[in-house]
Image (cartoon, rainbow, N blue to C red; front, side, top):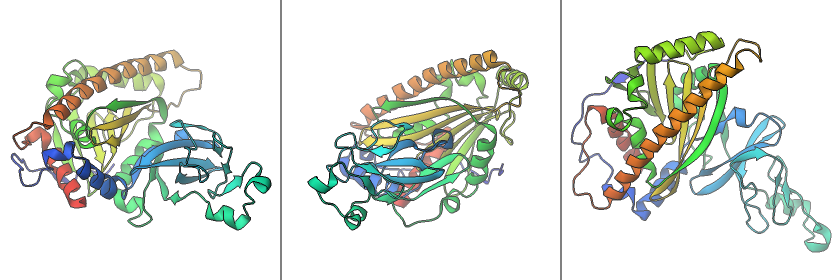
Length: 375
């Protein structure tokens, strides 16, 4: 894995570089951010393990637009998730398997987004082949890095790998080794999307908010780094008790592990919406932040363990015990984060001071700078 690039300087009061407090609730600023950030940048929308088979699909928001990402005989395509006939949503669940077929009137679409099936077309519409092409679903660029699937809302801009830079090696590394996806959920948050990102990328709150979950597992000393133009990360040593547990689990399960972060907890952000936590190379939490309004967003997350070189029936009971323990801890940890992020959202309406960024919050300063650079 690529080594750290630049250690942060300490920054305290960044009043001239911070996003204005009103950006956490102002609808005009929100619309501008969605257009310039979520509508124009590569967004992580899923994992290839969700799109393994023909007609597997996931749906996501790209800017304000609902988008389908679908497997057509091994080729991924991304289309607007709105029927060309009367504007009904085509796929209504976040993921699943099935052809693109409107539940309202039965229009179905092929791998080019063209309405290939129109019930009673001749007697009802008389739509020609050329007309069908004119009614094709708008498409979006879709690319992958390792098992991570990205979509962009515009055809202009850098290729995915050019944007990711050193993150490519990381995403490919974890995709090779952390292959056991055992949990996928969405958590609604009553806070602006930026507050959700900020909460995830600072370590200052860990010892208090996560006193019984994350704090006992990692050392209290955190170091933050730049990781190319697309994001940052911070790291801390895994505490001995937690290290013993993960070494035992990895050995017993014949677990493959992500290289480069032995004995460490690392947390990465890929702007604007992808968050990855790695524990000792054996456990990975993948989160994406999906704005749904000026003061609301979805936190979508999946948990992964390292794959196994054991036979399919070996030690499945213990693996499920590990999965259950990690589901439980993650549920509690995310509830803790939800409580404080929503509290900060409520307080933002009447804030009188500019936020301060101490040593544990330097990644927020970088994030603010990046957001402002996009606007």
